[in-house]
Every structure is written in structure tokens, then in C-alpha cells.
Length: 424
Image (cartoon, rainbow, N blue to C red):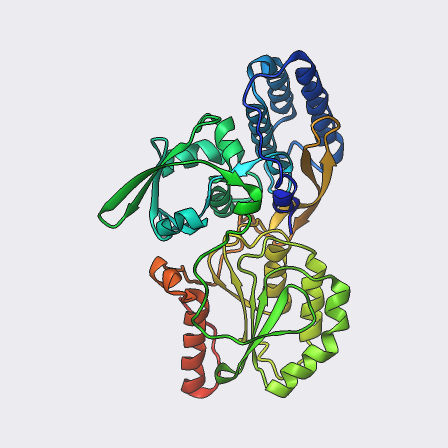
């Protein structure tokens, strides 16, 4: 899991956000923090000016310090987010959520160009499934334009969209951008078919917001997941398709994978599994050596169709180690990638270090390694088979990508028990 995601919990119990200009002592404290940040960028990032020039970086830092008398805390932090975003890699981020913050009580997800509410706190459960039209009069497109230059965890347009879906709820960020005002509710406008509704909504604590994910659970296909002793990975045996489905939601340690390898091999041998499906959707990263350990565990199984029987599922959240393993599995497991493009760039800066600012206690991360996983230039691992989840499937709990893959496998098995390469 990336450090910018882990920061979710760090400010959960404190909700006050300063929205007034700083006094002289506070300004001086921030100058010290900003200088500390700038120094660490220069000396600790493996290649800090691969996108943003050193001159532009210095000008942004000096302008920020000059502007301090006119800025409040949220504005300062938003400017630091913008500078980190300009560095140009998804592992170098200023972590606004490492300090006090609140969220608006919604989780959002794009379906095409439509931004849907996929979860909400109990007070607003009736808005689940509606389309967000605007906040304080700004359309979703206008909000995207304002947020995009400051969003963390971005390698490409796909992770940018995923980051927007999450950070649109962050009250402090919207405050820093001037979209909302401190102490006042925000005007949210929703659309449901021909009905429209405008509500004045106030933010909630991180503790309350942290309970949200998605109100829609998967009911199709029906899976029976079993614990294989590798935390973050579950196995479902699909007998009709002779397939083993691994839901790789998060990363165990390499040692945990290796310790349970013999037992996993025995399970797959007994089940007669010929096809492997490894699902990295929603996985934002961890230790990619754990994924390599899993691949090393699976490769000795001669019963697997290693020519045409291995599939990796991806989406815009597939990032960092999960993206790395996707690129690696395409090579070492001869896997076909199914779903939507990864949020991670296969040639990317990674393995970040986390730093603590001396006065504010805020955190930021900087990349310390560079991994070129493919020879050609690309901003994503693009799927061999592109399957886009639909809103209608999502609301009914139908996993579009997995269901369609299993339908294809069924058809191929019926046709001759041989699985040819999938084609669009």
C-alpha cells in the first residue's frame, strides 16, 4: 500500500482546520518546513527534476514563501501538493491527510463521463446511485480542471481519474482551492434520471468517512473464497472453468507467500486447475517481490496451460507493485491482461521514502528508485482484452470483467477444451 493511502488514518481524530491567515510565528514555522521539504526533494529524490525543471521548482518554493502572509494553512498545503504533483511521478506526494482533515460524506466513481455516488453515510444513503452534477455551482468537469494539478498518486490519466474520485471528498483540499468556505456547508447538486436535488452538506470526520467504500457488493459470479494463508490474497476454485481465481487485494510479505507455497500447490493440483486468473483490480501496491514469490510458487505446476491459460485483471487503481507485477506476469507467466488500463506507468519512479516536517508534523514522500519494466515508452499497462465495467452491472453487483472472461473461457472449453488467445 502506498504511503499517500496510508495517510488516511493519521488525521482521523482531529477535525479543526485553520482557515485564517497565519501569525508571524506560524509563518516562520512554515518557512522552516518548506525549506526542509525543498532540501529533501533536491537531495533524496533519485532524479527530482525529470519533469519539473530545477529553476521552476525553486521559483515555486520562493513564491510560496513570499505569499505566506496572505495564505491560510489549507492554501499552503494545497500549494505544496501542487509542487509535488509537478515533480511528475506518483510516488512523490505531499500528504495533506497526515494532518487534521475532514471529508464530505460520499464515495464517487466514474462510469464513462458520469460521476456516480457509490457510497454515503447513513444520512445520505438515499443519494447512492445518483449522479453528481456540481459542487457550489462548479460542474464535475470544472472541478476536475481545478483538482487535477494538485492530485497525489498520479502516474497517468487513469490514476489521475481514480485520485480525483477520492480527493473530491477532501474538504481541506476544496478549501485550499477556494471551492468551499470554512464553516459553511457546500451546495451539492445531484441528478437521478429526470429528478434533480440540491443539498447543503457539511463534512464529516475521517473516522466516519473511513467506513465508506462501495454500497454495491459483488454477487455475480458467485465465488467461494478460501484463506490460503497469504494475507491479502484469497483463492476461489471455479470447477466449471477448471480455473483458480486469486483475488490479490493487498500484499502479504514474500515470506508469508513462500511459507504457504507447498499447501497452495497441493490445493491446485487436487482441484485440477488448468487456468489462472490473478486479479489486481483495486490494488494500489505493496512489495512486488511478494507477487514474484507467488509466480515462482505457481510456475512448477505443469497442469496449467502456460501458453494460453493465464489472465491478469487490472483497472485504474492498479498501481505501483500491482502494476509492476502485471507487467512482470505478462512476461514470466505469459499472461494476458484483461480489464482497463493500469493507473501505474510501467516505466516509473517508485520505492518512496517518507519524511516528517519538523514543525507541522506533515508528511511527504519522495521516489528513490526507477524501474523501466518495458522497453517501449508507455504511460500504462494496456490490456490485451479491454472490458469496461458498466454502471448497470455495477449497481446489480455483476462483475463485468470477471463474468465476461468466464463466459469466454466456458465457450472455449466447450469448443474443444483448448483455450486459444483471446481477441477483441
